[in-house]
Length: 116
Length: 389
Image 1 (tube, one colour):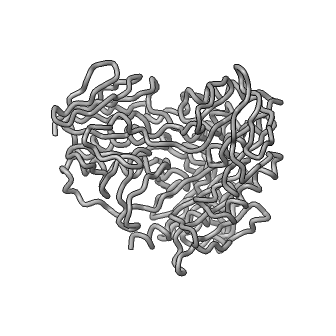
Image 2 (cartoon, each protein chain N blue to C red):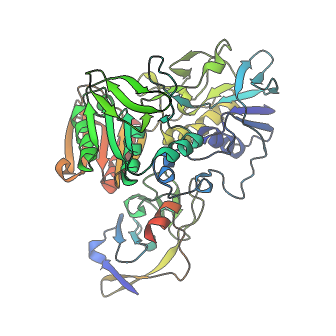
Image 3 (tube, rainbow over the protein chains, first blue to last red):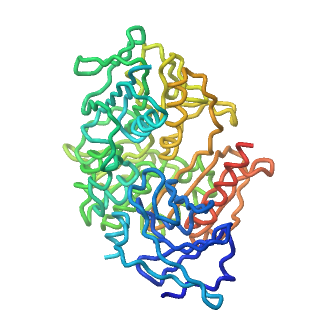
């Protein structure tokens, strides 16, 4: 379990980028009060989903407008072809924690080369 | 409508094919492409692909299990449109019968004016094959002269600098992108090049290229001569519409379209870089040479085609583009005109991270961001809401 941020520092409609892990993880607080965590990097090309547009349970990539369902990680339409990896979120004593997935990430080709 | 031919197998053509199928078209679909490649993504050609960080397979736009039920005619150019017989004529002498035609032939790189002799080492960048040829010439330690400080030129300069070339950019206007962004912001983007040791020469035209068989220099209008091992000409693109001349499809700066992509010939729509759609919000037609337009408009054009032009055209989102240079992300959305005011609302130009808002009579009309993706996303949404009422 990795501490991300204080819940009070993440109002509804906002996102937090946890970049102390590799690859970085984005934590979203939806307008309905739910918390979700997914890999921060779009699976299509190198863009931070925490910088994208959050609407309901979906985030739209700031570059190419593929939308990812934060509950499943699935993209609604191309250009993204692969789902983004989802992670667990736990809140304890006012702190948001991420429970990282054991699955391999689906990073875009350019970013993959860069993180090696 | 029982058959549709899509002329152009790139982003806009592929997305129109998808949109037609999504909207229930189950007839014969033929996709004609002048290049031999399956649809591929062009933006990385000046960036990750040119740098060698991603492969040709990474550029594929189709998903693995995608089946559009289309017949592909790749590597053959369309040479004409017979609207009476409703056939698309191909350069190999064959033709394709189609009740509906989608014009998605894109644009081609504008060559240098004048009749410069054909010299090796002189490139334009539009296609995958162009990128492969340019990449082969980007040799560490060599000197690259980029003619034109637009987005393609700027991105190639950035990539070439990373590859260890000495790079000079020559721009006729007083600042890069001055016409699109205004002088102040154009100058701010120009500084990004100079920060990385790229020489930027503005306000001077190119007189000629020199060299016998291979280019060895660029002669400027002020008499200066720049040594060059390789030259990239990045001075814009012109719509690929020559094949439609005499077809009855009205042409101007591109295929002239209504606000739904319909052309002067019923049953013919146009999308992508070659298409000049009427924008009711602006009151005139304009071409949009951006990726996002080529992805958004096909849905509308498909509806126009399948409905015979009766489908109402939804409001158009403001044009949006992005560019990656020297590890920075530049984004722009909206329409600017000379005289718009510009204010920096986030960050600082000197810190190379800022967001600037363009206003006309106090109304925001455009936004430019450099490494301000989150704020830019919000502003872009806001502009879309404002301009669509």
